[in-house]
Amino acid sequence: MVVGAVECRGFRNLAAARTPLGADVVVVHGPNGAGKTNLLEAVYFGLTGRSFRAGDDRDLIRYGEGRARVELELEGGGELLAALDRSGERRHLLSGRALSGDPGERPLVNVFHPDRLALVKAAPAHRRAHLDRLCGAIWPARADLRRRFGRTLAQRNALVARVRAGLGGAESLASWDERLAAEAEPLIAARADAVDTLAEPFSELGVRLGLDGAEVSYRPRAAGNATELATELARRRAEDLGRAYTSYGPQLDEVELRFGGRQLRRFASQGQQRLALLALLFAERAALLEAGRSAPLMLLDDVMSELDPAHRELLVSLLERGGAGGQALITATEAAQVPSTSALRIEVSEGSLANAPALRAA
Image 1: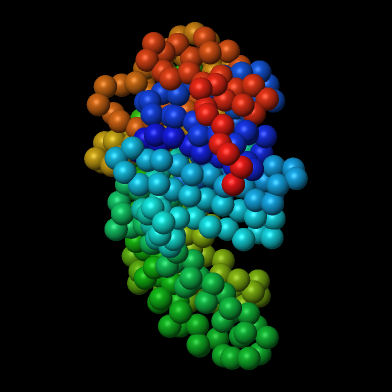
Image 2 (image 1 turned 90 degrees about the horizontal axis):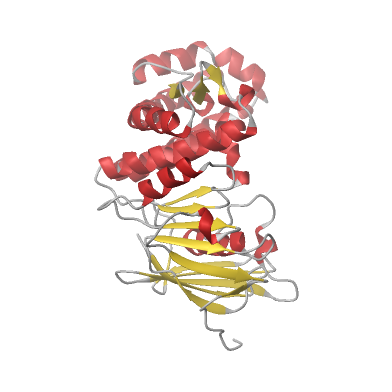
């Protein structure tokens, strides 16, 4: 998937302009604070309808403006529009049609940014959610597994709370044990398969980036077929009633990243965690391409600053590999930090982008 152009209005410090982006590799360069990350964020907002940064999405709206609006022109046809006003009201349209949020409806996008280090060093929930999105991207038929399991889990938890409050008997949980187990079994299997597809490319990329011994593994908290899962849920009912929530199942799984046999999130340096995130994102890209899926759009913010020249060359070679498809937007303070001879280079200065014609006021 390639974004041919991005048009922004009222978005952070970016000037109202339409910026052509139709190249496999786009280098967005300029001094710190110029608005480079904001341009990547605008593209992400157009694709997903939200920000990749922590905080309130309404911070996307430029000071003094009532709303932020981003339009993306997609190569091959179609336009995406995302808009947000200060009341919190949102719009997200594909060629004028409201996006429903169905799995696979939005283009795939991978982000390298300091806030995304949560995938490496934060709580397991971040990695579970990320892995489940990857499952849906590789195998569209499995895209709904997380939502279905989550809905059933919420219903069982609600019943646990009612029984604990004396509003029902524990025997009423039996049918929900079976339903939850039936939803858990395929979710566990999908996660295991996804990690299997990531393991080899993650390890290989780790070695090439200087993280010898990098590993990704799946650590499920529940195992077995649906019958075995239901039996264990029944065995733990008293414990669940005491805690007022379901204490067994894939909602507690861990996706573990290790380096030299030690957990990356606990024992790796910040620089090593950055390299691990980079290896993970490119391993996902390799897994998608191996499965015959479209390459994700790569948004790489300040990725080159801590890489030596050899690793910068490696990164560019991975992105420019013939026939792989996809697109990458990379920010850098200096254009020369991205050693590509074919990249489109866009200079940013105080929110204005070179060669981007200004737009008239809406």
